[in-house]
Structures are given as structure tokens and as C-alpha cells.
Image (cartoon, rainbow, N blue to C red; front, side, top):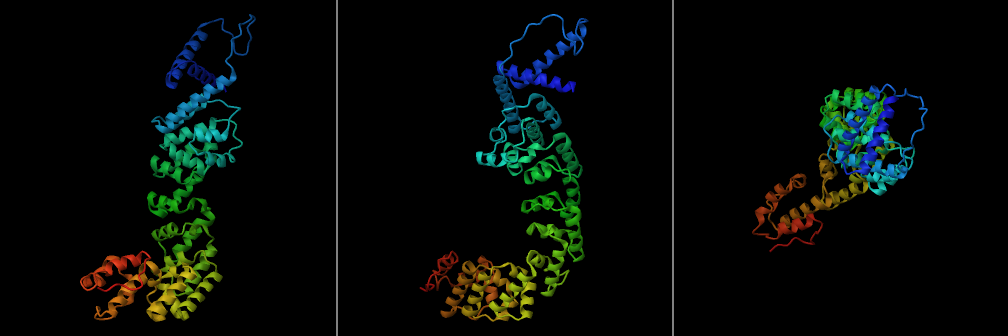
Length: 454
């Protein structure tokens, strides 16, 4: 308690000195520190000094006090000066020392305006500040927020990083530095993360960073994802840290491993479908049963892709999509299973998109339903930017006798753009000099009524 009052006295001295002179904050703190030491030495050397709590019998002269508004403004100027220096150029001194410095240099401000603080000190925009201030209405002082900002600056976060983290999670400013944030950083570095990686973690998920449970969660997830980089890539897609580790994540991982997926496959599955590890194990079991019913067994190369496609679909939706495939492409149940086993993402495509491809490939190109079922990758290509233009090129070459034999349309559609031009356009530059130009225009959506032949 005594040290608290000493620090508060030092803070007031720093404030008044900084407001009355042109000294820098560091010079002011140093000069006041020396003065305090001299006063302490003189007090111990004076035998007439009064014991704490006793009043002098002699009347004492009243000192003129500086007006509170001026004192408060000076303190705010000092705080903003120091915070600005720290956030623009992170200090090399330990974060705990910086925290103690600010705890001493800032006192409660009854006129504290949260939204103004978020804009002037944290770097938020006015709209961001207005939204964030609703979660910080209980704050009556800048003391804890200042300590948090200094701690984040000590981790190496830039002003922009701090502003982004506070905008995502305003309550980060309410976290206890010594009680929560410092132990979290110690735990994360103990897992092998560098301080720069910890700073990156703050930027990605500040709301989880202020919970000490993040350490145990990452202790489990880091080996699962294989590296911190893989973990950060997954966190950009969605936060595995949001799911209950013991009741959800671990049971799901155990079941997926029973299905033949390795840690690498599970990590990839999560990156592509962030909430996969967050849904119930029972729902994943249901999805696996549907996948097996459609002809994709556990352990097969396409099993992970199939799970990615149906994990978030109910049994009713899966049944409806299967029925639509049968109707649109005139497939039997067996042909649906063949197509799904080769391209599970068919169940993720919109009905209208599949319908348009069916009409073009079957009605206009003249492909057989079974031909498409065994080559479902064709249905994943762009209809307007790839399938139609290439069909028009082949049709033009056939009508003008420039092809010796009919090509496989699957080959026509699957080739890269460079390979397609090399096989079907460049050999005919003399006979059809405008063919490449017309093809490029068609790929951009400017489909000519007829390819020119001059």
C-alpha cells in the first residue's frame, strides 16, 4: 500500500513538472526520482521528523494547489506522449517494467471518455470506436487499458496491429497484464512460439489471447497441425480455438483418425472447412455414413474431400441434391455414386449451375450421361469462360475440315489454356488467323456468333 502512494506521488510530480517545463518525459521522471531520493535521505537524517500519522503542533503554510483541470490535462498529455512513443517504436525494455511505469504515471480520470480514448490512443476510427465503446462502458480509468497497450507494444505489435486487435476485441483492454496476459505469453513461448509469433496470434484472435486456456489448447493443436505456420493458416479461415477442446475437438479428431485420416489430412480439412472440428461428433458420424452410402469408403483418397462436401449438409439436403443430379443428368443411382466418388464437390454446387451444364453438354454438345458420370470433373469448369469457347473452336475446326478426327471433349475441356491453344489453335494460324483472337474474346464473355474463317 505504501509503494502505491509513493508511485502516485511520483506520477503527480511527473505530471506537474512536464506541464510546467519543456523537459521530456524521461528527463522529468529522472529529475523527480533524484529529488525523491534526496528528500528520503534528509528525512532519515532529521531526528525531529514526525512519525507517519502524527500531526505537527505548529501551523503550516498552505501551498497553492494547481487547479484539477490543469493537472488532469497535463497528465493526459504525458500519458499520450509516452503511449505514442511506445506504440510507434516498441520499447526494448521488458513489458513488465513498462507496465509498472504506466501504473505509476497514470491516475484515475473521472472525465474518461472511452470513445475518445479509443480514437486518440488506440488508433481506431470513429465508427469503430463507437461500436467498441459499448463493450467498455464500465471503464472509469485509463490505467488498465494503458497497461495493456504498453504490454502489446512490448510484444512488438505496431500501432496498426494494436488498433486491429482492439477493434476485433475491445475487452482486450480490460485483461489483467500480470494476472493473465504475461502468464499467457510465458506459456506460449514455453510451447516454442517466438514473441513475434505470439504477436501474430494476438492479431488473429485477440479474444482468445486474453484467456489462459489458450495455452492448453495450442499445446494440443500445434502437433496436430504440424507447425505454427499451418496453425496460423487455419486460424485465418476460422478459429479452432473457439471450440471446446475436451468435449468437441479431441473426440472429433479421434473419430477422424479412426476413419483413416492422418494429422495432415485433418489439418487440411480444417483449413478448407474451418468449423469441421467444431461440430458434434454425432454429426460427423452421420456425414460419414452418407459418404459411404454414396460409394466413398473410409481410407479412400477422396474420403477427405467427400467429408468436406457433406459435413454441413443434413440428410434431407443430401438426398435432395442426389435426386437433382439424377434428374438433371439422367443418371442412375450407380452413376451418381460413380460421379460423386470421382468429384465429391458436385454436392456443393448450386442447382442452377448444374442444370445449365447439363443442358449444354447433353443437349448441345451431345455427350452421353454415362460419359459425363465417369468424367465429372467437366462439371467443375467454367461454362462461359472455358467449356463454351472451346466447344465453339472445335466445332469451327470440324465444320471447316481442319480436324482429321473427332477429339475427346473431356480432353478438350481439361487441358490448360496454353496446351489447348497449342493443340487446337496454333496449328491453324494460316488457315484461320483470327481464331485465337475470337477464342480469347469468347473466354471473356464476348462470344461471337460465328468464328471467322479467312
